[in-house]
Image (tube, rainbow, N blue to C red):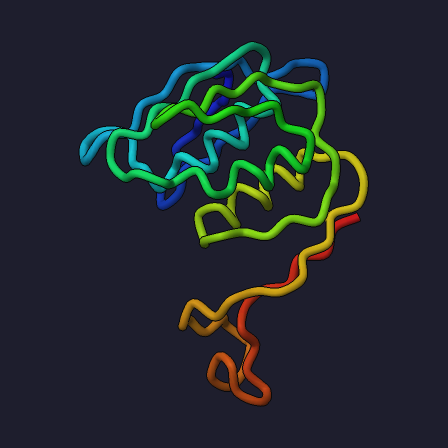
Length: 154
């Protein structure tokens, strides 16, 4: 795929190629542990959507986990779903568009896609996941308590 992955001790750093290079498409299949986790699938689809070539992502764990694909297509991705496969043809660039994440994994993928997109990207509504953020004050969903981070990128 072309990502450089470095061990940072308590974290991993993944670095994409420079601005003159593109990621290379790969085929990925999800499997139960120790295979590729299905939770990573939306992020992989977002990366494949701007990679060079055609990649196929096969979902072997859960059915119906492609609800975020229309949102990536709205941003200009070329993706079609065939059964439990997503066929992703990489495009030169995505475009900023209003999107809605059906779940938290899809939300992460849409943020990554938005960072790679041209044009304006503005995040709006967010759902409480029951976690407090440091410095947010109060309980989530209460006066003075934030429900989550805001995304506003231009």
